[in-house]
Length: 502
Image (cartoon, rainbow, N blue to C red):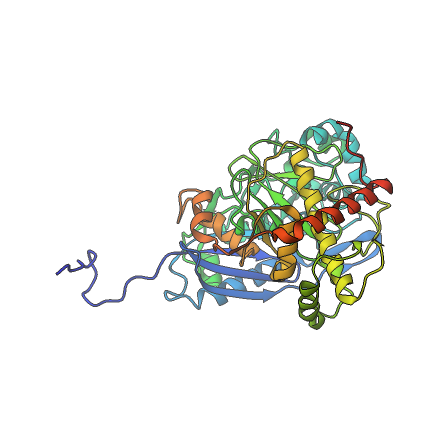
């Protein structure tokens, strides 16, 4: 008979030690969420704490009290670690992911000097326009445009309105402020959170020429490292406030959108994910930087030095916003029984499109008259699928290979009908990721180099397999015909550039 030998130092009959876990922290707009996850991707504990809603004001301001970030994060961690078998002692590493473009002016000790400026703050639109002009060649090489809400202009705004001697100030992203609270010392920022603040991940430098043109002190900006890099260890004070063990590793995170992509398992070149939330977002991994002359696509940098091209449409799940949520299941059932729609819908509910094409004049339309409400609903679902196909075609036209299946996540992916329509329209299977959460992506970064040797290994072991949805062959001819009408109409209206001859 085979007998298992107890581990050295273990008492016969003693319970095995708790499995090591990592903690992923998601600092969203309204709340902080923590997931404690083991090496197999099993969530062992979670915690949550509320944040104050941002305050909107004149000049396009959008602000939040940054002094509330750490207490909320510490509380969410404490609630999570209290549920673990060893009360947090089994946590090996932690990483923080937050909203892209949110930052705060601090003193040299890391204390906020003003409310945080949120990702949608427009007060510095004129300064961002100046930044775009000053760094035009740099942004062109990077395939990036400095938009009205970019954090770079807001740094320049702070340089003009600092409440004290600018020499004593610093800029911190949400993740930087929390990294300092966790370690008790200043930390580097990651090149994902730094992108909209002007960091050039291609040249791997802050844009000194642009900063000079804007009057931004260079010493305000932190050093930059790849996501997943060790930033230090949890200090005694943070351990006491969070339940994390002192000496636990702190690793750099990424922006929430990038972390959500990692959580689907799309972490290797050729893998892409279509996130169907309020809007549709397509993100993927390429070995080389891809630039899009139209500006519809731009890239973050992958933790391993590859690239993360992506774009966000102006429509998506919002196409169904006029429907009561309780109606959707019945409409899906009726639309599934009916089959492909008899009309064509571009279900844009606002003015202007930004991906897969850029047009400020774009607006929704319907070609033909729906036979009934189910037909109208089906046409709306197909219209979003057509945009997704245009997005993939745009990616491929730029020379980017896309491997099947396409990963998918977001609320719209919970509709079996919509997912079948999308798979059929695209002509490839969709892999539905059940847990594409920012906090899980943060946990993957925390696990890289601690529970697993690489990000690819962490994703392989820690992201759920999900389920695959295949195209429906008998519906493909009808959808091909409707898609052709959709593209023809977008081109006729001048929103979609005509395909080059030949």
